[in-house]
Image (cartoon, rainbow, N blue to C red; front, top):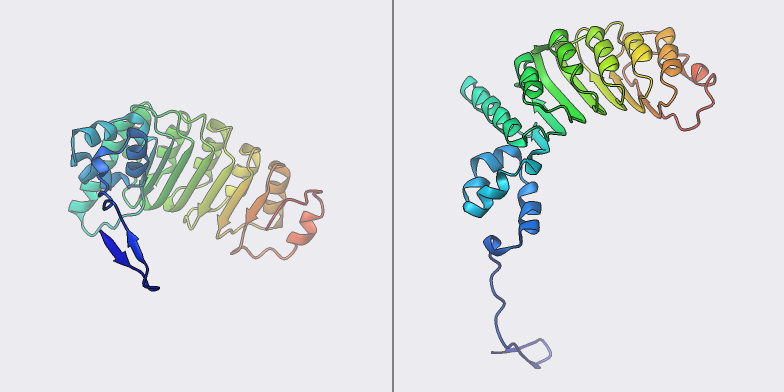
Length: 252
């Protein structure tokens, strides 16, 4: 087949390119493609494409990371359905779960389910906008079973306080990053952090109600701290406090 370009020269093509068939890709490429999907997309769509894709979707290694934050829940029916799918994803991991993000539907019962499912390798946990459904008690029990946890975010979980942070610090000695934001019971958290989270590198507390003694306690109790975010905390002497530490890598 011949084509003519803009200069009037003929270009000859022997054969038209074949269409790419995703079903015929090697397993490693298929795993990469499916891995770009969300947990909900895999559970509701991808695993039904064919038997081969179903087999790949059943592999526990596909479920080391479960992100349930990129969703919208409009009613109670969807709420229950999403929670059910989250539990199904946890089951699929067969204890290999390392990273889970939960938004809206997190509860103490769900935290217990994660632990009871043998997911003790968890390294990253995000709990966002779970409001009144997650408590100090639920996190206290969970922390005892997560010795490998390195990153934790608790945002808009209104029944969580410094009591939970103290338990987390004791039960998760490898914790390096903590985001504790917009939680109603945010009093006394600075001393719970300072006394129990000495390995922290990254800390975000928004808003913060403590004073200069609280910030000083954190800086003294967390000698490895590299990043501190207190952008809604009115601390007028923070620069003076920082002069007591010869740590040029600490960023505010």
